[in-house]
Image 1: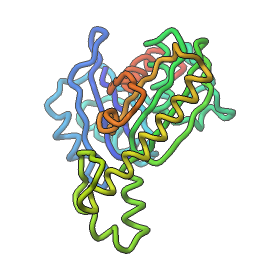
Image 2 (image 1 turned 60 degrees about the vertical axis):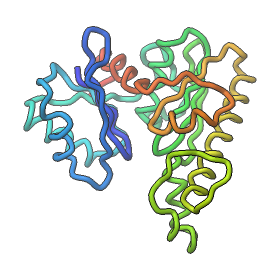
Image 3 (image 1 turned 180 degrees about the vertical axis):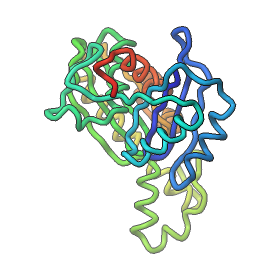
Length: 252
């Protein structure tokens, strides 16, 4: 089965085979032609038996995926649906369908990875943090801007910084010596400080045995700054997609 995690900025994928994930990859999709990206990424792959998708990018993106898959592989993708409960997890949202499907998949994967309480941090376009009780009850979570979103806000809403940011820096230092580096350091420290504070509050609430998991495209960038040291699982959402795809009630 091919697994697709379709986000606002990128598409991650892997192939589930004999209980493991292979052929991992990703591409940045925003403002780019999806068909060309898919051809380059998947055109050489053998036809999968099935395709399971977690899509937070909206109906237009779903149509592009459906068209490419039908033309190339003559298949119809199955889309993960968020429900009130599935795979041992109870959704905290009063309107369960409003929870992002990527967060739902991450919660399910975390539940299957750990028998105790879990804090899940996903550092993507947005930074999301969710808490999961040992019983499998989702306690809720929060959403904050991701690193690139914060960089763009600074560039857009300030007359001077926007003209000086240049290329995105990847290294984090305490003392910046140009504006791009200063912005990178500032947003990285902001995000890591927020994560550390929220994790501390969740651990205080759920107990010291709480496992902390981190995933998402910016996770590796932020890990060196974090006081708490989460377990990094870049495939967390994909693992959850695989689990949910096995339950007929969880896909459309």
